[in-house]
Amino acid sequence: MSAIRTLAVAEGMIVLATIHQPSLETLAQFTNLLMLAEGKTCYSGPVDDLDGFFNRWGRPVARFHTPAEHAMNFLNDDFVASNESKGFGVHDLREYYLSTLKTHTPSISTVNEGQGLDEEATDELGKAGHLGTLFWNTVVLSERSSKNYSRNLLAYGVRAGMYGGAIRQSFSSGKTC
Image (cartoon, rainbow, N blue to C red; front, top):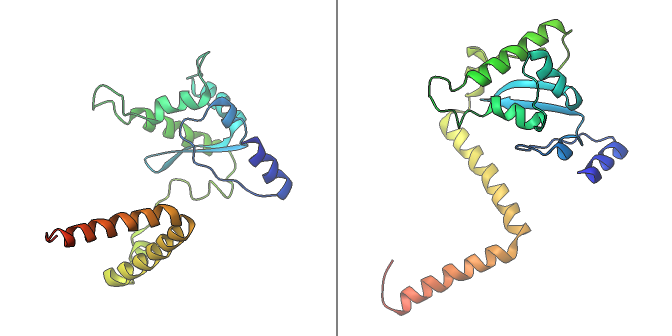
C-alpha cells in the first residue's frame, strides 16, 4: 500500500479502494475515508479523525481495537442476536454523522448528502425502455467479457478444450446431450 501511496502523491493521482475491515497499517495509508452502510454515508472525513469522531459521539474506540474494527461493530449487524435491534447501530451512527454535518460549512461532497433521486429524475433515466436497456447492458457486458478473454487466454483455452472434449466424447459414445 505504501508504494501505491508514494506513486499517487508523486503523480498527483487520486486512489479509490474498497477495503473490508482493513488493518490499522492499511488504514493509515489513506488520507480520507468514506464508510457506507445500506448505500448511505455513515462517515466521510480524514482517517486521522475517525478515532476523534467516535470519541465525540460518546462511543470511544476500545484500547485493543482499531477504529475500523470499532466502526464495523456499528456498520455490520449480521451477528446481532435479535431482529428488532438490527439496523440500530447503522441508524445511530448515520444520525450522529448527519448531525456533525450541520455544524460544518457545506463542501462539494456534502451538498447533496442524504438526498435521493426525485421521481422526475427517475422517469428521465428509464427513457430507453426495457429493450434499449437490455441491448446496451448486453453490449457493455460483451465488451467486458471480451477483455477478460484476451487477458486470460490460458484459462479460457483450457475451458474451451474441456468443453470440446466433452462434446467429442458424447458424440463418440453415441449419447446425445
